[in-house]
Amino acid sequence: MSVDRPVTLAVIIGAHGVTGEVRLKVFTDDLGQYKKFNDGALTVKSVRHGSNGAIARIAEVNDRNAAEAMRGTELTVPRADLPPLGEGEYYHTDLIGLSALSTEGEVLGHVVGIDNFGAGDVLEIERPDKKRFMVPMRPEAVPEWNEQRLLVAASYII
Figure 1 (spheres, rainbow, N blue to C red):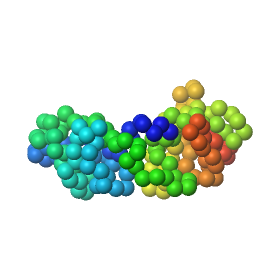
Figure 2: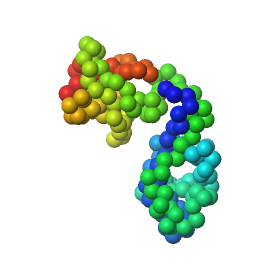
Figure 3: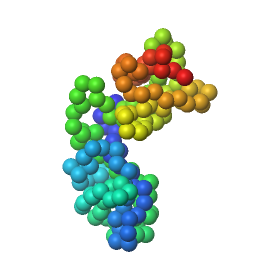
């Protein structure tokens, strides 16, 4: 976990309307507590929930063309601005790229993605042969993890 690495809280996925609002894919429960992003380059004036996700007004974006040009832009904050983690909690950014080993010591690959389909986080692990499999991020499936690697219980390995 790099304390100086910025953490992505949302990504702009497109424009909303003609006045410069943007649609966001949000990776946090409370984006509203943050106003400055990307080392102060972007200022979020407001965030509301629309029928297709979060909609934000960014001070530096004034029309639809500018909003469309922002597609794919990640909204980041310094890690120091995030609240401290409790026992068993993690930030997704800390798991992406981690080496994955079985509880028996077999090298499985590395974490390439994290999804949540409603029942909790699911890790996507890419094997050295580029094939992928998924594991729920629950104690019985991933009994241990740290800054260097995570362990996957053998019964969850495909």
